[in-house]
Structure formats: C-alpha cells, structure tokens
Image 1 (cartoon, rainbow, N blue to C red):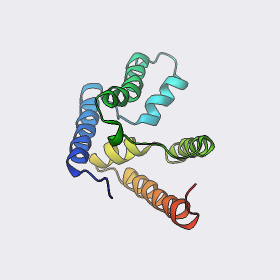
Image 2: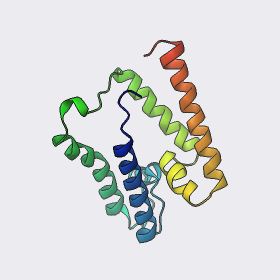
Image 3: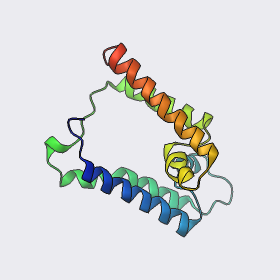
Image 4: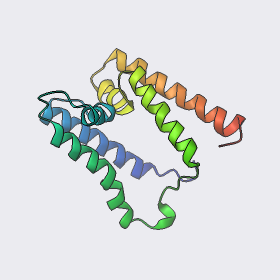
Length: 144
C-alpha cells in the first residue's frame, strides 16, 4: 500500500471498463484475454477475427512499452521473481482459465457488468485463490 495511487488506479480502471464496453458494443464479443489469445493459438475454421485478435494482443503488449518511454524509471514496476516462478505462475494461470472457462478479464470485467452469476462465482474463486497464494508465498513461506 505504500505506492498506492488512487487517481491513476481510478483512471486505469475506467479505461479498462471503457475499452471492454466498446469492444462488446462494436464487435459483439467479450474482451476476455484468454479467449482472444486462444482464438489466435487455435483458430477455428472460417474465423474472420484473426486480425482483430492479433491487433488486440499487440496493443496489450506494446501499450505498456510505449507508456514506459514517458514514465520515470522509479515509477515503473519491477519484477523480482525468478524466471522459473514466473513460468510456473503463467502455466497455472493457463490451467485456471481453462478450468474456469475464462479469465479474470472475461469474468471479472465483462461478466460481472452483465450480471452473470457464473462470472460472479468465477471472480470470487479467482480472488480467493489470489488471496491464499499471497498469504502462502509472501507471508508463510517468506516470499519466493
């Protein structure tokens, strides 16, 4: 909480809500990152949204990189975990999105805004798993 910036968090959350709302209104599809990425990795026959999916993922990767060019180094996030921990965490997220039939963006942002009970249960499960993970890895194990 020592680096909490409520104004930038509020602006960021508003932009995420605006982007996901526009994506739904303009494309008729949910802005769930795992579904978008899955459509790139395993496209279905006749899918006409490959370019759209690629543009979305490219924006997710390059948007923060562009933002970093104008951000002072001390204000940037630093990843302190080892590469094996990051790889295992990424694989666990992939398993979780498969088991949960979607990711936090699809359920937490888009599903909750549509009052989906399934998304509420999924989001509560994601949050509980995150709380337990932080408790175990940071407080009980002393960090990885």
